[in-house]
Image 1: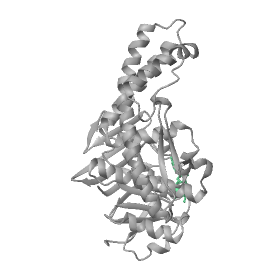
Image 2: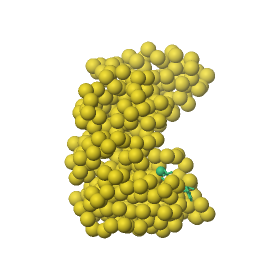
Image 3: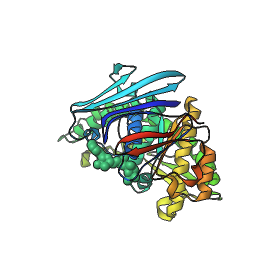
Image 4: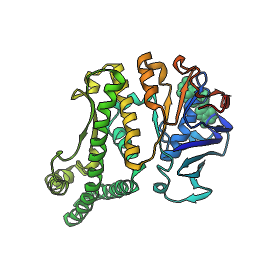
Length: 363
Ligand SMILES: Nc1ncnc2c1ncn2[C@@H]1O[C@H](COP(=O)(O)OP(=O)(O)OP(=O)(O)O)[C@@H](O)[C@H]1O
Ligand SMILES: [Mg+2]
């Protein structure tokens, strides 16, 4: 997948911008608060129909304006143009100029993987954030998964409303449980596969990037054990918890309470890892995501690296550069990393929401 052009209109601190990207490495430099992260965020928005930084879309509209527009033309076997118009009442998504009514038909058309310093917060965030990440990434490659999660959430909402009643109807709860179990089977199977496949790749990438024998990985903290058959186990889990749920007026177990653990040598990395180890762990996770997307879809996602180079030592920078060769990537930094000087990368400068290309047509 190759991004050709990005157009921004009244988005964040961009009034109007048209940026043409090169197939390989694109380096965007600018001082603090000029719009580097905003630019990458606009591509994340098109990929997920939400920002990675905030839940309120209204903040994306340039102050004093009515609506923001993000448009991207890219090649993915065919040339396509996708757009998001964010207005006061919500958003409109368009593919080749035609409105799309379901976000499941839009999410993942453009597939980007972002790595930003803020990502390290994910280790200590509430489980909800890690679930969100897992859901997001699986949804980008599987619209069926997105639909299963959305049906599950509707059933869960219904079950919780019902549990608030003075005397919940047990037969109705049985029906809801069965439906939730059916959705959960799909969800668990996709999450198991996601974690299995990332885990393998991540271990290899961590060793390569950090030149160490440490083993980085992921552990799936599921509502059922790793070897258990989902249908039977979920049925008994729901049965065992029914009384408690009725007393607490809320559904206490299920895929909505699952978590993802980042590990280093089998230990929770939050408890034992150094800052540098955590950074490498997250970087290898993100690089493993690229490999996962490639493996599942046969397509290469675009890599977005926000202010990452300055945090890595020379050796790691060099390894990362080797690793991303052949992948289209957008790299932001306050100044060009010395290692990338004269590397043939396309260079851009961002000043107060104005982007200008510094060197053209190379790579
Ligand atoms: N809705 C908005 N309307 C106008 N300006 C906005 C809006 N949202 C954010 N900004 C401006 O965008 C700028 C921040 O941009 P961004 O986060 O992309 O900076 P950056 O170049 O990544 O900086 P740093 O190097 O510090 O990370 C701020 O000046 C902020 O005021
Ligand atoms: Mg930034």
